[in-house]
Length: 220
Image 1 (tube, rainbow, N blue to C red):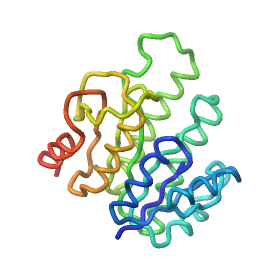
Image 2 (image 1 turned 90 degrees about the vertical axis):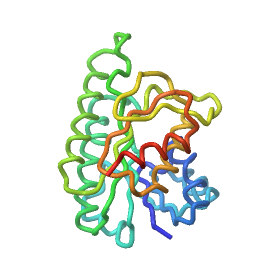
Image 3 (image 1 turned 180 degrees about the vertical axis):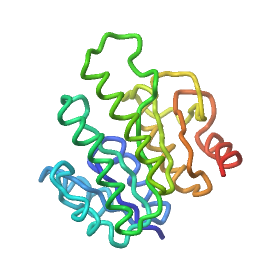
Image 4 (image 1 turned 180 degrees about the horizontal axis):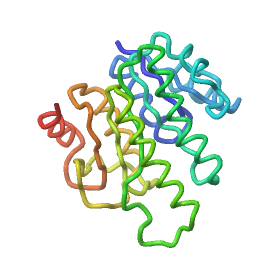
């Protein structure tokens, strides 16, 4: 049984994947910020850990990761402005990496962003900053020396799960349901031979177990 720590554990994708991670025999701890999120996470079977990512120091986080083997970074500012995007999506990932190194955590899974996201819309400077911060977070993790898996989902949708995806180093862009992203990440975490890779994730025709198995056969 592995101890998995989810940064941004109260987010939609994180909450969707938590029961599946637990069903796979893992212990899950989830970082949350608001009081009402404690019971929501506990009801999912996670151990709620109170903390504001923007206020925690790397040393604070390292103490939370004392017996953790794997971190899933699912935090995001959600378009709340450049300052918060920088603090959460950028600096938050950087302090998580520093904390993981201090605590001896070996692997981080990072939910990032698809490079083509929003390219057909005029979304302004804030979105361009978001994409820049996401890319630099990817770079920081890749260069950290930790084992990593970076998942870049397309635009996120809230329809029901399809159970099918397109996943690989480069796939056509599209809107993918949050439930499918959560399922894909949980199954990827359960397949540890998928490591040190960046995965683009979009809607497709491959059942998720098939897509994960294909990645496992080609990733070293």
